[in-house]
Image 1 (cartoon, rainbow, N blue to C red):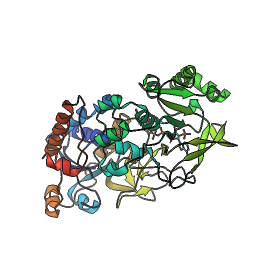
Image 2 (cartoon, protein in one colour):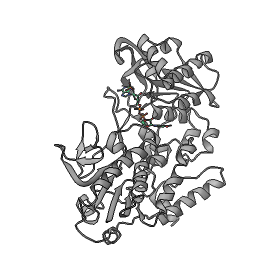
Image 3 (cartoon, rainbow, N blue to C red):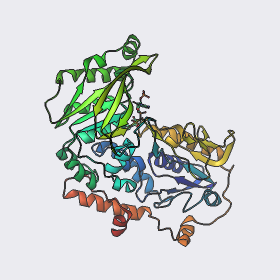
Image 4 (spheres, rainbow, N blue to C red):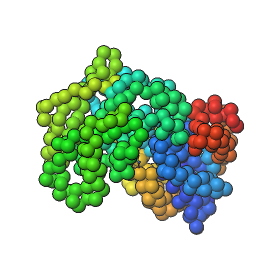
Length: 441
Ligand code: NAP
């Protein structure tokens, strides 16, 4: 059977989904992928840290998928604005949402809206050259930064702030961020975990990297690394958890550090208020106790001087026009990947994968299995939903004046970026704005 599929989003889940769909043996599949931005790869391009190039090499695999003649790419197409769900339903038998989690969670504490307080996701998007965040202009003419949360995103932002310009200069970090970070006066980065070291969400290589930075020392407080009996017992069973704690303990010997910057890993502390006149100046934190694995305030407080607060407490999904959304879980409502309405009824022909399906957890590779599970359901459903019409999206978009970027155009942009990087010994110099990108076409 002929099956036409539209994929919304062009990040990892979208490409894993496309690869699985194009692998179907018994049906003639055609896949069109849409992204709001010109450049594909979503979180790989705009989320993965610039100093982690190996993780980014996964795009070689996505390139192979895109080279399939049954695949087309439509960048610069905003779902819900440039094309509506009803119009896609008319042109495609199945629609696969892979839009990730584009927003972030709040702390819900006073002072969170002060200038200088922002989400780590905004800061990440800024240094990765996401076109929507070019003008974030974080003030780095400060000495203290508080990072709230101890997941891998917190590790990424803390490390980028801790690295020297020389360490960053050979990466694909956005030029505007490199220039700003070169002038950074940041000395102390405080990373706050609300629970103990055993409960930290970061992974071993990420925490280990802090021991090898050119101009920054990782600092810990020995009493905060002591484990309660339950955490100690858990560590004995969980090798990764145990190693995290051991790596942190190995930092005890650094004392107060001798390098120009310090990354203070603090545990069992929560920010309760951000204060300052017009902008962030101080963060009041409360010591916590671990009760049944949960952080409970102790009523003991201290104050940390900081000019910037980056909350890194998890991404959050946002609703898409006309697509059922579970606002409690901040995901597209679904049953295993089949989109459902508010009462759980399956919406024929609509599917979801990745962070938009299960929430913002797991590494990039986790989305392969996730997308394949959704595609397996789609295979079961072939024939149950059919496109109403027979037109072509390219014609519709052109008639509407939507100047989409196809794969060939993207490859030209990509080649220009890589070429610009060669002279500077960098993997690429990112083109940030759409005008810069169109200029090379
Ligand atoms: P995460 O791993 O879920 O970590 C969120 C952190 O925020 C946790 O430490 C959590 O503590 C804390 N938190 C949540 N609410 C809080 C609050 N109200 N106050 C204080 N702390 C709070 O999320 P993430 O760092 O955003 O990462 C998302 C996913 O991307 C993860 O699966 C991560 O591994 C992945 N990722 C991987 C890499 C890599 O492989 N290098 C890089 C970046 C991201 P509790 O545990 O107490 O809730």
